[in-house]
Image (cartoon, rainbow, N blue to C red; front, side):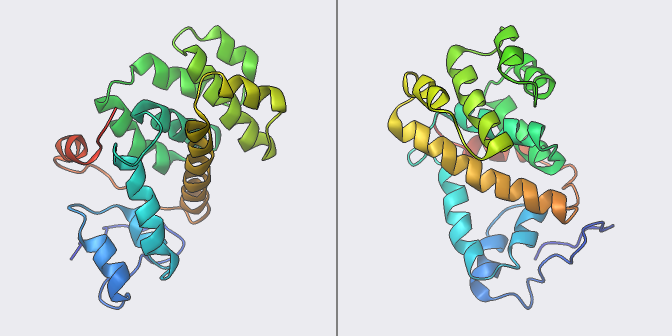
Amino acid sequence: MSAPIKTQNCLVPYVDLQTAPPEVAAAITHLPYRRNIFHLLGHSHGSFPRLMGVYANFFDGNRRILPLLDWQLVVLRISAVLDAEYEWDVNAPVARINGMPEEKFEALQRTAGKGVDALAKETVFTERDRAILQLVDEQLATYNNTEDTVEKAKKLLTVEELVEVYVVLGVYVLIARITKGLRIDLDGEIPGLEEHLKKVVTGK
């Protein structure tokens, strides 16, 4: 059983694995270390196990359609724009150990909310990066996209990749909202995290 965190700032208690439905407890306890997000989402008893299935698909290179660093580009952009510290803290190591350069992390933060002109000035972003980021930025600002933005993305992404960008958006905006709204506690240092991520995050 996961040990309780020492000091809790979250506005609601984390799920109690002793009293949680078995399906919820099983979805959490199979993980080798504690992530507070799962102890928070676990309160949604019916949806949590199914949401975990969708979440797990992104880690599996045989199921995820987007290249690994495109997936992380979307997630980190969401985190930067929405100032979702927990989400950034959880995902930055995934991107880093899979080759995202530090310059790109900095550019994602620096250009958040600054528009297409700011994206164009960052040489670390590829044309594909810019198309994805423009799609994401418009969605976060307006819940919509211009036809021009979509057409630009279609020239660089397959239809399947394009649609998966929206799926990633939906899942990770949900995570950003709940972690910010309920003031989730950061997980802190997790021993052996990098080695574990190298095993569970697959594909390129």
